[in-house]
Length: 200
Image (cartoon, rainbow, N blue to C red; front, side, top):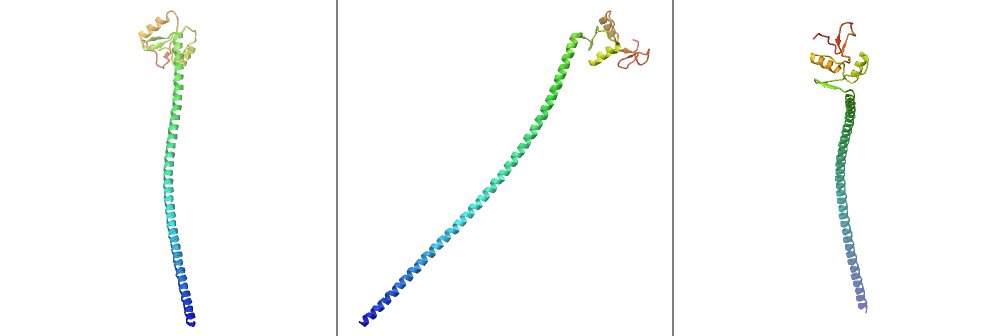
């Protein structure tokens, strides 16, 4: 029996050793599984970090590219705005010039209408490329001259016999002032343009 016990003890010891080995093996295997799990997690974390880093780099590149495109578009829009402002300024200046020209044309038109009305009223006569007005108003020589110069004309200067005959015919029995004066020196006659009187 002693032997049996011994054997039983051996058996137990053997069983304990086997159990212990089994536990050790299980423990080692568990550690291996745990180590593999840690390694897998580590690899996943490294891959995830690499992916995140790649994503950040791609986003930075995209943001930089978009920023450059935005800057180019902003520059183009600024240049277009400046061109439009220049065109607007030019158009405004042209408009002001046109308004000034329109005012001048309107003024000239009014003057022409006034002169036309005066021509109709005072019956100007066209002869040898000139207009002549024979007024029936009684004025002094200086008032008569002022009346003429106020209208951009002057008293008549008789240049030839034909013009002299024309003035005599048109005047008839009336007396009219002509552009001849001795106001500078008594007895020395000059025409209103400064030329001296010559006998023709």
